[in-house]
Amino acid sequence: MLLATSTAVILALTLSVSEAPSRATERAAIDPKQSASSAEIADFPKIRLQRLWPKAKLTRPVQVVARPDSPSLVYAVEQAGRVVELDLSNSEHEGKVVLDLTGPVHDKYNEQGLLSLAFHPKFAQTRHVFVWYTARKSGKDPAREVLARLVPLADFAVFSDAGLLAYTGSSDVDTALAHVAASHDGHVGATCGRDGYAWCERGLLRRVPAPAVEVVDTLAAGDIFHGAFALAILEGQPVEDAARFACTAASLKCARFGGRVGCPTRAEVDAARGAGAGG
Image 1 (cartoon, rainbow, N blue to C red):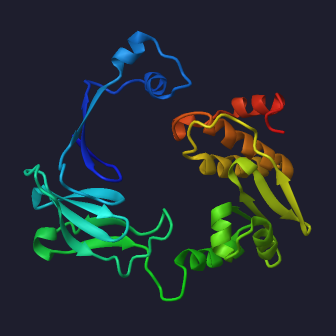
Image 2: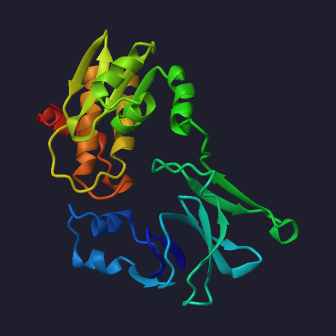
Image 3: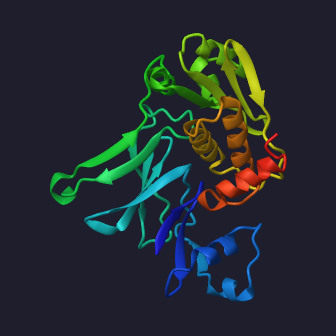
């Protein structure tokens, strides 16, 4: 049994299968753009979800960890800063807050907050636990502080549009790009979702559009853009060509379900660009 978290409840996930399915079967069964024969679908594991604590109310849980000296007790880590104790032996358990760090925890952005908890290897003797969180600093934005240290080190500073605006405090991507480029020796650009990619070049703002697709799932689109862009730059492609290549790769991904399983191949990206999808 695995414990899986959702935004509001904790579920027990049971897989009834003697061996793991092949990758082909796995992709066919979860990718709505792929067809699968009835024989392939029959091989896919049967999944049953069951609510463990119907009365427990959790907000943005990011981790569930078992207590080493008492396996019936587990702890749900909420991104906003709370740790909630739950009892596996009691389905009526409503949860008990055992640690509240909502004061010092900064969770303004999706990748910030109270992110994990770990028990000391000798917890029974030390009674120590470790927590990993983004700290709130009076009058300061942790994300901006980190980026201020990292951006000057990068030859290619490629932001998301939201990250760029958070970093500069601007409300406009064009203005923010010009602001960062004025004090940065390397490339400065920003991914802009369906609007493609924007960057500054010799004091001028440049843009390439993203190919239009029917969006199925945007998971990992940003990661795929950055990977494709870095590959193209390392291959010696000009920035504009690299941006079109990366926009095409990210758009193809968005037309498919899943993160890694939805990642297009190099051949698919080249074919799409050759057909005019890359602009």
